[in-house]
Each structure stands twice: as C-alpha cells, then as structure tokens.
Amino acid sequence: MNEPNLELGSFLIRRHRSLEFCWSECKTCGVPEIISHVLRDCPFAKNVWDLAPFRDQHHLNTVQVLDFLDRAASLVTLPPSGLHSAFLSAWICWNLRVARNHRIFSNMVFSEQEVITKAIAEAKIWQEAQKAIPPPHINPPTSCNIDAAWHAESLSYGMGIILKFNDEDRVQSFASSRCHVSSELAAEARAMREALLIAIDRGYEEIQVLLDSMSLVNTLNSQDSYRDSRNC
Ligand SMILES: [Zn+2]
Image (cartoon, rainbow, N blue to C red; front, side, top):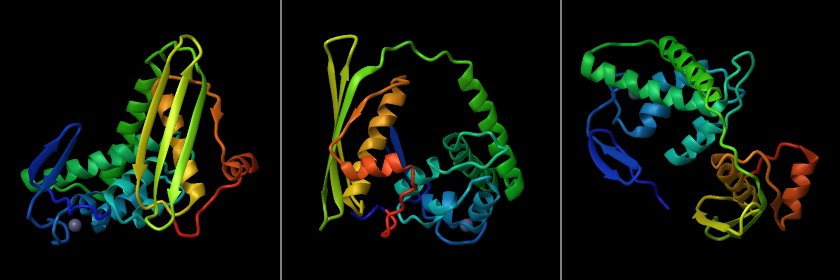
C-alpha cells in the first residue's frame, strides 16, 4: 500500500489526525517540504537526530512516515540521558516542527544543537511530570490472548487481542491489520507489542499473555535480540 505524499501547508483533518499539504520548498535545502522531509530527510533533521543520545539510528532508513514514527518511539536511549526513548523522539519531532515554523514565519534560525538541547530539556520535564501522576489502581486482567495471521504474498498481517479481566466478568477485544510485515515471527511480535501497549495504556503493571507461537516464546525466552533479515 503506497503512502500518500504528505506535504505541509493546507490541512486535511481527520478524526485524531491531521494530514497537511503544501507546495512550498524547504527553506534549509530547497526540496519539496513533506512531513518526512521535515522530521527525517532534511539534512538539518538528520543532524539533529545524529546529536540525539540514541543507540542507533535505524528509524532514518524507513520508507513510510508511520514506520518512521513507530521505530523512533522504540529507539534505545544511551546513559546518562535517563530519558524514556518515546519521550525524547516525540520531543525531537515536535522541536523540528517548531524550528521549521520559526524559519518560515518568524525568520528565526535555530541550530541543530539548539534544537536537540531544547528537545532533551523538554523531554526531561515531561518525563518528571509523569512521575507526579499517580497510576490508576486497576486490577490486572487475568489473561490476554493474542494471535496473528500473516500472508506471505502481500506481506500483510491481521491480529486479534482478547483481554479477560479478573475483577469483573468482562472481556475486551481488539483487532487490527497492517502491511509490510516480512515474516510470521515479526507479525506475532507486533501482536504481542500491541497487546502490551494496550495493557500499559490502561494502567496494568502485570499481565498474563497467552499465545500459540513457540518461535516467539523461544525468542523471548532466549533474550536474544531478533532482527529480521528483510528489515521489517
Ligand atoms: Zn530541507
């Protein structure tokens, strides 16, 4: 599935999402200014990411914007930053956008070092602020069943998650699908990740996960990092 060329300028607003279009050129390097350019491909943005205390920069090799954002949120930060990677990548994206707006609308130019310094400072403030918020007291679900089906020809997968709560007679289910997943193991791992994100989002600190993928279980038990040879 091809991703639309998301350019900045006018607005197409969907529920929970804004897609922006414009026909202007980047004031830094002169190429058409699309979202991936502002956040990833512009030499200015690349320099900012290079200055960030991440263990690697594999998100810069993505093709689609959504994959880029997905991978950026899972980057590993290096000590002594003490930052949660999701916080820092989000603040880097935000400050790249702010710097771009200042260049265009205020004729103010910030350096790459200024952008990353501001992003790290704001990420630390945000991270500390989260500690002050008491976590909701919610009993963990008894179990979470996950399953994924992968289609080799289309490189797409579908997955289902069922949360069974132990404190009440209630079941909650989720399902989604996605393209560009290169293996069955990667599909199962994505389903597992989705389940954990849902549980974390709802404030659960413990969850029992039930799945039928022995390859994923063995990979997790081995605690080895897994990298698919086809880079998905
Ligand atoms: Zn540029």
